[in-house]
Image (cartoon, rainbow, N blue to C red; front, side, top):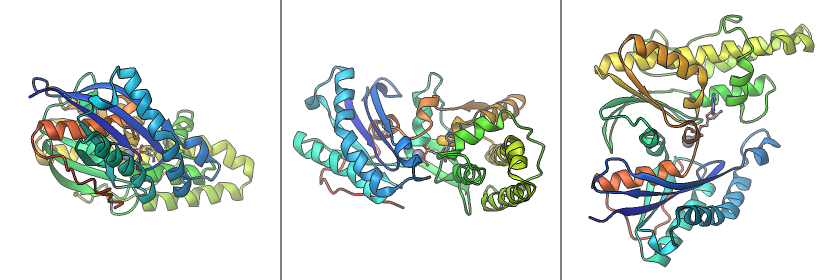
Length: 344
Ligand code: KG4
Ligand code: ZN
């Protein structure tokens, strides 16, 4: 079979991403030819969170120029594209429809198949684009703004859920705690940065379900505990809260990271697997990476991460997931241009 050129479009939330990958029969991992991203963070920051209607409108403005940029940078023409992939869900319905609409329009115009990709499968496979790609099977820790899951991954499309959050996601815990601390959206990376100057032992915060013996997570209680601490400090005066903010940020991060690390180790123990893959926006967290690296090194377990620029939402992971599925022969691209989205 000839190489396949796959264009990927991501528009599930607040990043518009477009990328082009080439799947070659003799290479296990498709090659990333070009990728382009536009983040809407600056726009949504004014409102303290993502405004869905504004997100959809901005995706519409950005997606075609980004596609043109990707084609220009890769030296390809529109007509070279063999398959168009887009994020089918989960995500914001209106935002998803932009990617689906553009993908189906391109597919129809080019007479090429269109493939809807699960956003989390994109995150899950994104470490395959790193310099040191993993091998199957592995345990995956998927930590994003909307999801926190541990999975057993035996191959492309062969995923078994081992455990997940029963309430908030890890990224959500970062973001909501950051908001309580008065930090700007998106709170995760800002809280992490502030935490670098703080004492992680300063506040005793809960580690829910840590000793439950299962692989589920719960982060809603942590948010409440952070709120209680913020209120206590505030009652002592705004300057007290200001002075202790870094300590509280560090303690919050430590609580989230400890749970993620311990549960990942438990999943590795229970499955007997010796390889861990971390993906999703929270996978960019330096403290999480440092603690996972340390814990896995002493146990002889390999840990793989996506490149930092592929941790948060992007088009490359969508093009990659589609290309790997087609390569594995597990899924035929659909040709009915159905604008199929699944917000949940
Ligand atoms: O995967 P992602 O870009 O979007 C979703 O699919 O949700 O993840 C975004 C999440 C946000 O909650 C963001 O605050 C968090 O990832 N995040 C971080 C860091 N970078 C992004 N959380 C902690 N530390 C970071 N360095
Ligand atoms: Zn995501």
